[in-house]
Length: 157
Image 1 (cartoon, one colour):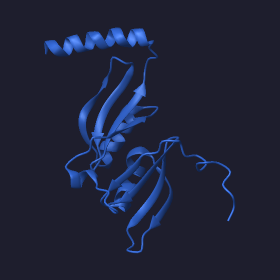
Image 2 (spheres, one colour):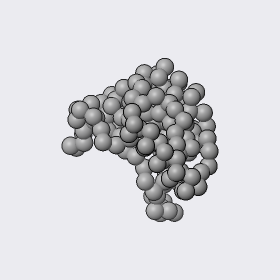
Image 3 (cartoon, helix red, strand yellow):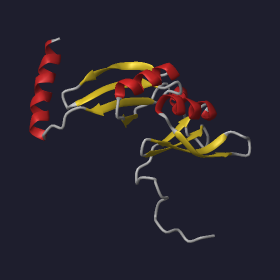
C-alpha cells in the first residue's frame, strides 16, 4: 500500500457533495445524459446495491450512494433542503438536455439581477439542481443596486 501524497484524492475538492438516493445505477445514467457526467468509479455492496460511486461533472466531483446506514433519499424524506449549483458554459443547452433526460422544471431559466442566467430543476431522484451561466461580471455595488430594484419589483407584484 502506497503512502498518500495528499490529504485528499487528486481531482477532488475540499467540499464534495454526496447524494443519497434510491436507484443509483439509474441516477448515474441520468447524470450522464443530463449533465455529461463521467463515471469514475462505482463500488457495489455485498447486496449488489451501489454503496459508493464517484462521478465527475464539469471540473467537480459528486459522490452518490443508495440509501443505507441511516442516510435517506429526498424521495423518502418528501424533499430536500439542499440544492446543487451547477455552472455550465451554456445553461440553455444543458437545461434542454436535462429536461429531455427526465428533470422537471421548478423555476424557469431567466436572466437574474446578479448577472447569471439561472433556473432550477429537480432530478427524478428528488435532488434539486440550479443551472447557471454567468453572463455579466458585476461589482458588489452593482449587484446590490440591482438586487434592491429586483426586490422592490417583486414586492409590487
